[in-house]
Image 1 (cartoon, rainbow, N blue to C red):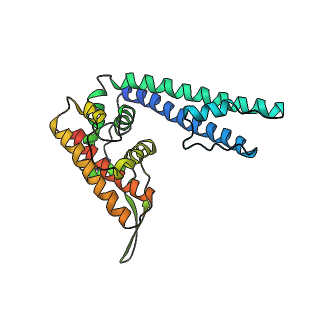
Image 2: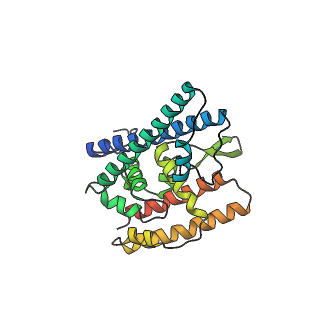
Image 3: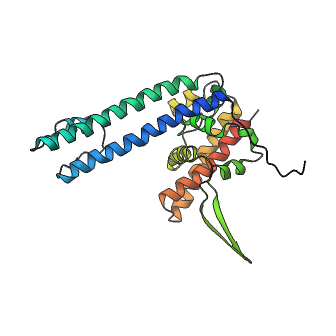
Length: 254
């Protein structure tokens, strides 16, 4: 009655259950990354360095399987670490397949289909954003979504002075990471690839137009910040903040 309570959006049970699966996939990704690091550090201790251009390719894995060590204990430890990497990669791939099917559920597909119209956001990323945000319409303005995702700078005020600090990192860290990774495409020249055109097929023209405007806007922001000598991570976060606003517009568009 006093108006002191702020209403919140409570997601349905189907959303909470789907979040459990997406967060299991995120845990598998983090476990796989740590397992790969441990394997790489074991090799590094013995001076085994991969000299190829990229790691975890077919050629790199062939090189890994060919490594042999003088002492049996070291060899067993290495094989155990390699088996763990393989098991976690298979687990992640299995979860990706399950999430791909889950995304097509009628509860989620309408918003997922809209979000995947944007470059850098495919089915899995779109599903994660849809589940973490839950209801885009609960934000009256796009800036509110960016603030909820923790992509806006903190503000320190004292007297007449006001200083902007690092981003607040409030809200869902999972959704924020997905957006920052997607925003790393901002430096690429705007274009409509065959894959992106396929993802946009059947979607409203207003959503397709927003996706194209997002590419152009993020490209300009990236070029401008790069010209000012900003670090790559700062550029990615700034582009992610812009991308979040475009996603809000696409999600609430009629």
